[in-house]
Image (cartoon, rainbow, N blue to C red):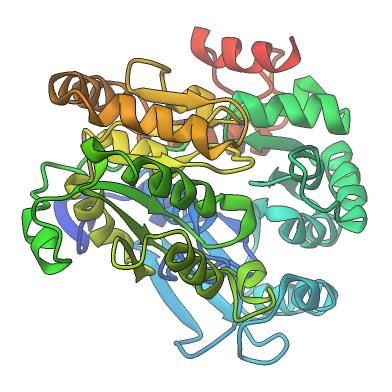
Length: 456
């Protein structure tokens, strides 16, 4: 007999006593490869964002289903060699390269060493795996070699794509794009976070539609229950202000300057003179590498230059268990990303009843219902964002109605469903002689529509 646990705001809470299927003799784990992004890292700084959270929530959910996972990351700071993510999921920090954060370009040079370290670790425990799941293209390069070494199926999630970013106007990383094309052609299954990402895999990388599975992220309802943001408003000195929130890593891709410019425009109008901006996040690796002290410092100087000095509050990275208070205290959450595979911030804000103004890109089109839960903005003109933010803020009744619709829409996206789909993929790949049918191992109308729409 063993104790089962469920994830709660402060970790895992005891749920019931029973027999865990995965503890039976012969049960094998999934090797999860996340070279640069630990699921236990604080979000909103460095390279820590939606990918970290998704891996953590999926591993927690798989643990509850009796599916063990070993998550392999590169050691980039202090911490034990191994740490529990959930009762059946452990984080393994491999001593590859210096024990400090590195730029992604530097991590590239360590991937062969990382693969060798993963193989040695498994051999030292006489550990075998039922499948490999690579995350990001670095994890894919490792996963491809592990498949050859272990002769098990390899599943790949990209999270972001070089050609998608280039299409949005960002510099093209040609080496990465070439590698992603090879990985997309060679992986046993591709898991996309949205129909938009699946469409990009098909159209930009010519990936096979028959190997793409869509598993949209979700919201943990226990973490995003009712929250009162009034005390946080007071602590920030904003008890009577209307607040526009930006949450995420600070780098050009995320477009925080668009919100600052839109807010500065609105504050020139008397009806919005009480508008304040709160920026929850810190420099990513890309943001920190920018000249003049990094993206956060650049944005702070820009805010002062355009008249937002004292009205733009940069609060740094916020632990995920506290971010709900920021959503709850805000009147509108703005997600002006140049590209977004899914848009977890938009989903979480809606779960707290906060209307969202977001870029009409990628998975954000699937999260935000334009004119109902907020607004989708075509292009990246701050004036267009200012108009959308004004439409949310000027009518309190309309804002409240949008908030209620936002809650309802967010409730459709659950980690439970994402975990079900991932477990079905692993099961299908682990069983030889599967009958024909969905390559993902699940059959439902919504899944077929998501994958089908990607090819249209």
